[in-house]
Length: 255
Image (cartoon, rainbow, N blue to C red; front, side, top):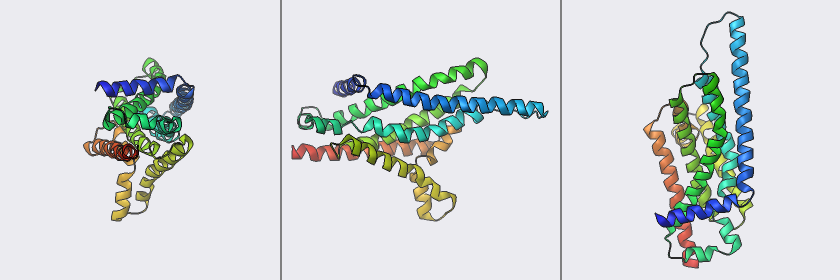
């Protein structure tokens, strides 16, 4: 555990000694903030319009703002997760430190888990920073915090799974741009696989729909923790880190 934390700290320092982390924080906060305030504005507009027409149906903050916002975060993840994961191993290869890393007395699993954990902490910090917008809802509204917390958990699980995929892809090249582009393409493909289920109901379509990350976000967005969805994300994390370990093992043998 000590070695994992050492690797994690090293990665976190490498993120924050360069402009990378700060640029990602700004991009994430700006996009998140735009989505949030746009949805709040729409919520207020339609609420006032309904009152003027004498309609008394209740408008729910969690359904109209929080749920839709976290659904849109999926799109933000497609753009930013490749930028977080692309440097994890590709930079080591580019700097010529990969051989030293794989021949060190630290086990492969500790290296992989430490780097992956650092990427998750960076993403979680971005989400927490952007989530300060929710303080506005608690000050002027009455949202239910439990569905919000479950939606956050779902977003973190999805990000962790995609970061595990990006970690594996980062071991395959020393070019960060290529690693980021391939990770984006793979994440986008996994994202859109669920579209098939909207018009096709055969077995192969159901399989593709199940593989899609968006399919397993629906229960979290509703404020429900479904075991099968949690198992899916944990399995995706395990698969991504397992492939990373096999890739790193081949590098160790070549070194």
